[in-house]
Image (cartoon, rainbow, N blue to C red; front, top):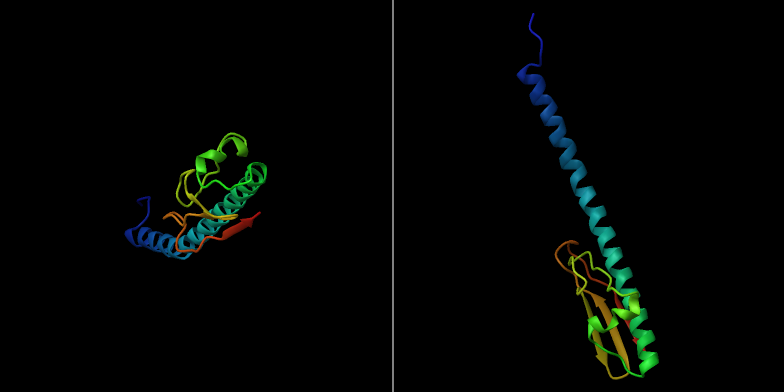
Length: 119
């Protein structure tokens, strides 16, 4: 009597694994995208706080992202949707500013939150 699995048994196992993967993968990707989106928005909120503090201190808002490195413990926050620290936009309009995370390609389709501040 020979030991081992038949071809049919192996095919059934591969089929079951394929079905489980097809069901679980979209759910997994959805949760990963959601976590990245939340982190990108949280980091944009952190950056908005730094912009507000500096704006109050200097009397004007600054749209240059790298100018806030010292204000945020020496490093800019990462945008997980772009994979960079430069994945944020600061738009200055007179005595107000908006801060938005870039949507990037690593978070699926979404619209980032915009954080508006004013003096």
